Image (cartoon, rainbow over the protein chains, first blue to last red):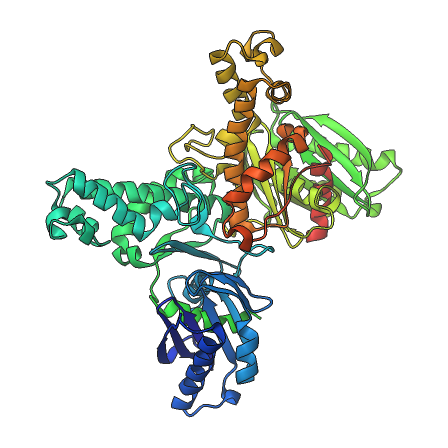
Length: 316
Length: 316
């Protein structure tokens, strides 16, 4: 039995995970940004105890605790170096939790943990090497090679969303211009859809958002496109073309066995991946001489983070 | 003692390499494109024998042979899957050389071998993880992680030059538009320099190439820039800005301990890397929270390929 923790800016999710990567019990607590990190970590310690007690388990029944956290993580030292979701800097979370619970505790970046979850028990189960791209508020990503999380030796690497695909292009939250995140996040999809809805008053997308593009969501352009709305079809085309450039870059560099898409936009499933695969193919280096991996959507949803965090213990 | 072979479109270079990664003797034969692969490989077998005999060595004195070849390589099967330098397709070179010489034979992509050479005995000696970008006719690259060549599990990966940095931009030799190669190769530098020389007749670059931009070479823009020629300064700026985008992408993904630049343009040494490092810094994700590796130029020159090829035997 292991405990997986998925830390987020709104809530922290805890799961009791068995040897088959199944979640037996879950618990969620709110993320408190108004207290010092030590206090928040104490809340997390209490939640782990509660989760174990609910199943009449003691620390002895638990192999350890794995944590997925947003931000730049020093996994060797067990420190959250920087997280702009929590406004935390250099927080030695592993040491504090270990001290309180007397259990092994390990940590990784949350996108890395989610990627590991998908490889252990999700869309890429049975596959050794896969890349996860999460298309949400931003674009996150995790690379699993030979069943292990991959990141470079220096801190701060493996930021797939901050690979430039159009140098000098759209401004990105990271300060650079033209990052994949600025074109392939759900936020970017909304930006494109709002722009096009405003300049095409006849588009179905307008009525679908109550004639106020500020109410646009990530589903409307896809639904309007299915109904044949030309403006919406153009929005999806533009979005997918840029996403395809990013995916082809990932393939040209890592040639993983599988590309997994997660996050809100991936809810479109084959509606997204079908046309996308056709756009990716001609962009991959070597054409017929190279192997092109399948593009699938994640299937664990929010549980990927918990299962992956718990699976971190198996990597050590 | 090991033999390292660096295969090129014009010539094949052989080196006798000792345990300290020093080249004791070298031999070069022309690449024959007019004969079947088996014939060319027989020439290579003869050259290996000659190299050993010249030092009064027998096969028993040799640990084995490492080959660096351009193109898409199946290193596990020992096959050159495709090389547009030789017009070879699915050539089982390792099997043939093993059969003829009764020695262990291993193969890798030539850029990968050069990167390994720089890590074993060159600019990145003592470093475990480094990325080599060669700025020549094209942009090649090799990634060394923990002292080993890195490439993804499927064939055809790790093509750093074919990472798009400006989607839809300049056409690339691979068929895609906007690849790093189309902006950061020596070929791209010449394209930019010719364009600017033509539209600025007053530029020093014109007199330096005999008033015929067709005679432009990769040194002229750098020399003219040092002399204060504004047009040349602009050429170098444009070239370095795009190269910086590619290097920042590599850093945001791999966070290696060192970036090594090789190929013709890297002959500019600090003249290139100094301004480049300043351009790369603000593009790296995480700013002060991430570690930014040094950018250096390769120091083995053409020997990197031979030394790296010989070092392949140590990876097995």
